[in-house]
Image (tube, rainbow, N blue to C red; front, top):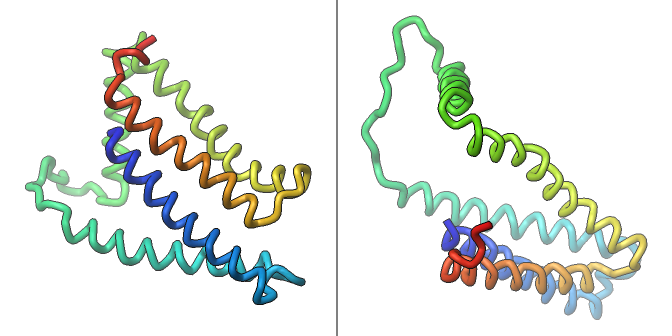
Length: 164
């Protein structure tokens, strides 16, 4: 899992670097005059969409084929089958793993939501309160992504030190 996370954060690092370079050289061309942040955001979304189309398609093509694990019962809807399977898994966790795994998964619900909220609101805070321009915001997140990428690899090698 840590290798996947390292690859994920490294790819975000490289996409962010491309956007930073674009915004840096765009300053001289007037991209950061009136409305320049909008052009940078549009470029960022275009690069992200391109990377998603290319790499998600590639990953889908590389995904190995697997045989069916379950048969859909007669009269059941495929639309609801995933929800039924999730409900069954939740009941098994509640029955057999009430103490550890159950509480861990329950605690992950608000913590994951909080992590997503921090990521999205930090841009507004850094821009409005700290007065960072888009280039400085990019550098801020580039340093954060570099630290997270390195941290995931360190965590995978020395995981015994992080068990509390």
